[in-house]
Image 1: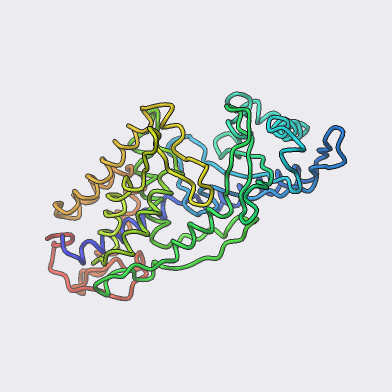
Image 2: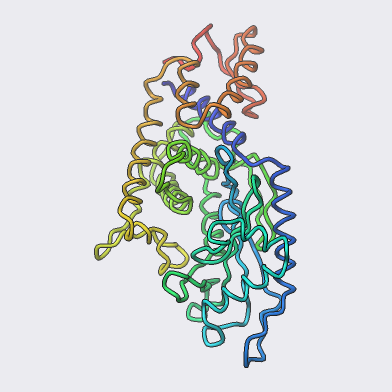
Length: 394
């Protein structure tokens, strides 16, 4: 496949990613729910027994894929995730036990009849390993993680969260993780030709507490992660041990940084293929344990469950190998119809069919002028000479 054809292929993947974004309606509804529950929690009375210190006026802020702008529409009737942190300032491990903090937050949520009902409708009555879940049926679920200051790491935003399994505090650092991720997002690849990039590198600002603006025009890394997560979702539909998003996000981010710092590329698609290829290189194995460490909280191991359930590591290996083969296979595929049939296998019929209709309409409108381009789909100003019926040919 030629460089121009690969560039055109990536513009299709970029459009596919936009079709996987949650809708503005879904986003605004999640934002409203998020603001309401934040207000409810921050106004709660959480006075500690025998202490003058209270947990009122805590800060609630988003983490995870909605904050990073890498969320994708769920398959079928599944809800998408909205991950929140309820941070209680000026509290230390000397003031409260981890499970007591969890209990206080859970009790406050249950004081609201609607939240109580939705918690009871959630698995295990809303109990999570590190917090609570409120499920809005057929919409999304809010996962709320309580946290306090990690006073040991005073020069960072590191926090401690209560972990039910170990009945103790575990370190985390969602705020600095977002900063680390966004710094790498801003890194611009070096392309050998002027074909790459186009207008895809739009940037958006992020605020610490508010949800970021829902922007469909994403930088490469954010779109790559969405594409990889969708491929995972299709591969693991109705199966167990699906690789978790934080692992895919962390490994893809490290691989992206490595690739653009050490290589030049002809097009965006080749860079995506290399990101998938290099992801396993950033999995560590230390003293018999798999490690994918939070780069901003090195004592937090995102691969912790791999060391407890061997099938989870095997499932990741199978997915990564499948994804690498999937993307590399496009080098040998000729013809527009074959391209889209392969995309359906990796990403599902519905979103690919929508993009196919847009692309074919756009190409048809340009064919009379002897041009190959995806018109309004790409946002590009360049068009390329095209021989009849050679779209995506070698």
